Amino acid sequence: MARKTVSRKRKAAEQQAEQLAWGESVCKRKRLPVVKKSVVCFLKGREFRQQQQQHEHHLQQSLRGCAAQRLPGILREREFTLGTLNKVFASQWLNHRQVVCGTKCNTLFVADVLTGQITKIPMLKDREPASALLDQQGCGIHAIELNPSRTLLATGGDNPNSLAVYRLPTLDPVCVGDDGHKDWIFSIAWISDSMAVSGSRDGSMGLWEVTEDVLCKTGGGHDSTGVPTYSHISHRALKDLPKEYTNPYNCKVRALAFNSNNKELGAVSLDGYFHLWKAEHSLCKLLSTKLPHCKENVCLAYGQEWSVYAVGSQAHVSFLDPRQPPNNVKSVSSRERGSGIRSVSFYEHIITVGTGHGSLLFYDIRAQRFLEDPVGASCGHKGRLGEGILNLTTGKGWLNHDETWRSYFSDIPYFPNAVYTHCYDSSGTKLFVAGGPLPSGLHGNYAGLWS
Image (cartoon, rainbow, N blue to C red; front, side):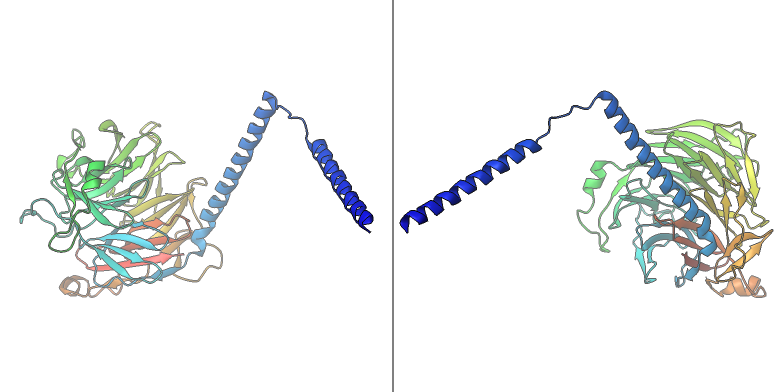
């Protein structure tokens, strides 16, 4: 019995050894010689990957363009209640559900588009109290802009002549630029992550820099009202618009738009001129040209993909390419005489136009015509303007029946809400629209989400 047991153990060991040897031979047979790719194969592979990436980019671009084309026709409005705030002049999306807004009554607030909750943000004050003689009535916050990395927000201060900067996403105060302009700030544009330009009613453009030292000094304590402490900065440069060919008292900077590719800053003034500046570490004037429609030029946007500026005036949107001769400016009529273009923006190939009569119009820059109203669309606040043009009309909003209204406007049954500001979210599927009554003496507001 012992011999059989030993022999069985020996046989099992021999079989195991044979299996291991067979496994090693299989592994050896599986090893393939290393093949060195030639330069031609490498270049062909890189070319294929580049073509694939370009195809995916073009596909995404086509999908975004198709969505931008069809979206306006299916937008529906949901109004928000803003209480007794007066006229929303500026707005920007902070994230997918929060929009920051500025009003004529100099209030900065954040609106939650899901809950409708309003949160007011403390205004930043100058080093010294503003002069009692300073006319701040009827001014408010006209501009809100986020830097490219969305880490800083620039807007007007408690003194409408000053620039206030907040940190994102917390909205903690960073600094106030309070020694530049002598009149209200109408527009702001970031030219880098740390440098912003402000345009003022006094006809000047201020260049401001938020340095690392300024950022490090913030958040060290709180003042008597509980607001975190912040720094005060001085302008890096202050440039006046040229006044040689115009009335110097009407040479007021009304809107700014930045071309990040060429580092050029466009500016529109109320005297009907467009000015172009080289804007990197300083401001250097490149050109000034008279606009074809020079009344109420109050809004400006730049289309990066199309390399054109869109200027809104009393009844037209003008498209200006600085590379072309000054007389080669195309303009389209808004078909709303007298109310004025109050806001304009680019999204893909669609230019959204907000008017003083409370209309939202959509211009296709590729087809060079306004989008038409879809056949059979009758839901929501839709109407036909002109020859079947798609026209979205703002809701009722809120109007204060004060002494001014009772004395001058009580016999007018309805006031449309001018679209002073509008902005798309990052997905391009939500459009925030805000404003208020067009007559300067009326007190009221409107805000709505179109999605």
